Length: 288
Image 1: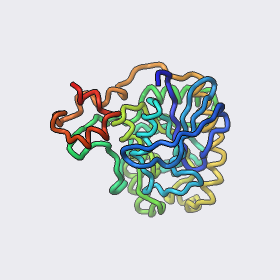
Image 2: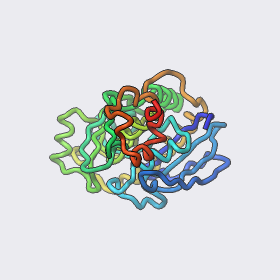
Image 3: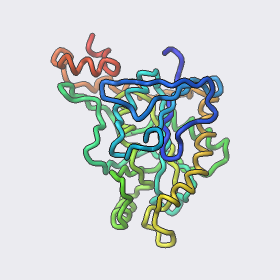
């Protein structure tokens, strides 16, 4: 696609975007399996938008069951090079209240065994990930949230836990001692894969609770989380519309050149089957 396309990943509570027009569904197959759902394509304020609910239609996939590789690869197949992820999180900080928005700029990985790279099987690649979110996307999203006059926090560390059970109190206090700000179950595999796919990626984390560390609050429950999510989702949808209004974002970054200098394997040593799987992402190196 020649036209810039905004991708949106919906988390808990965000399964559709009412403001989208000219809607069409895209059923995508990828070399890494099937995505969570059909992609929903359309337009918002004249911008082409591709939307995917990460947990599937009807919220049927646990965080550990999501095929993150297929989801991100499918976005690239549909021409997405800018991706906004919406994610519900628990707060690990007194200053981040339930209902607040957070734009994390760092991650700590506490997941286990999730497939979070496209490479391997004869192709060795190590991309830079010191700054795991796109600064241009963060700036654009901050501008939108400022205009909406909502309470949000720019920057912070997101702990990605395995789930599906919530934290023990000891774990919650451990993460707080590390200086982490929020905890969730989904954003980090997406961020890693988006970087390998050379997609500008950022997360808007929706704080729903104080995890279980806060002595003055009830322990986190699905019911309490859903109650806060309903309010947060309204802001998330307005933020998507705001991004679409000024899309593509102005500024420069290195996200879309992340593979430059990152491949260690000589192209002629990569097996044919692996080359075929990686053609969309790394094909420009194979012909060099």
